[in-house]
Image 1 (cartoon, rainbow, N blue to C red):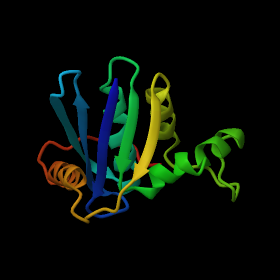
Image 2 (cartoon, one colour):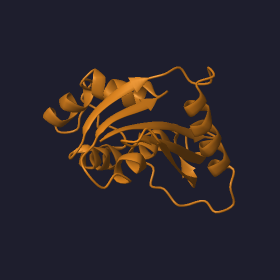
Image 3 (cartoon, rainbow, N blue to C red):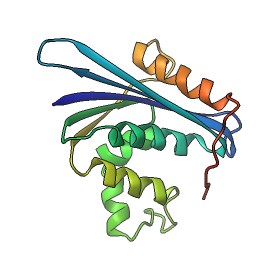
Length: 157
């Protein structure tokens, strides 16, 4: 099953202000019918990078069987972490950066790795705020969630 997950994160007062994520999942069934699911949530105090990660995590965790997944994100933080193999280096170096500093957001990176275990996942970067319809929709979901009244708690490291 081939699935495309579009993601975006937002933080109003980055770092550590209100924020949200938006996730849109596209799946075309064997009959050629497009199925779309959308997810979003807002947080009282978070960072943009945490919301970028949450958008991917929620998309992957929504899948209930192994899939071939393309994650499309405007976050270099997310896409480069996999495409440039930063995550592999972090794990090898006990969650330390090349500068020997602790990797930020370890909790979410580990959750993302667990969520992607059963899938064949690729990451594609798209320029944000450039008219890409699904990226614009994810941005709308993320910012609307960040501005909402029912904000969740987040742990910022």
